[in-house]
Length: 174
Image (cartoon, rainbow, N blue to C red; front, side, top):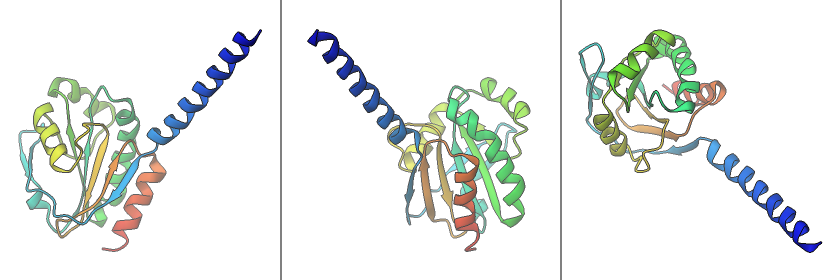
């Protein structure tokens, strides 16, 4: 009689721990920083080289993602909308994918991505690590201010509302 009660209690305890850990890890981790952004360049899918230094004077949101990352797929429409809504206010989004070009190309059309995208797993991973993401977790976003300083880092997917808050918080200051 005691064994089923112990089993049920352990099962409930495990379910509660799982729910709490999901809530903790499902929320994006926002980190404010004031370090200078590394001098990086990205080779975009259209064959151009995009140097961060060429974007000085603009807000730059670098969103590291991959085609196999479900939270990344959820976030893509929000990024497309943000580029449309905030581009005239000085925002430039860049999307380095930790992926192969063949996996990314169909997504450009599917999501109507309106910002430069790169697709090179090793280059994207190295760039992401230079921005402080040693875990390799995706999605990972870095907001760089017009002076070239990292304003915020966000590890984890952002909802439309969270992305909007991030952009309003910073672009309202420029």
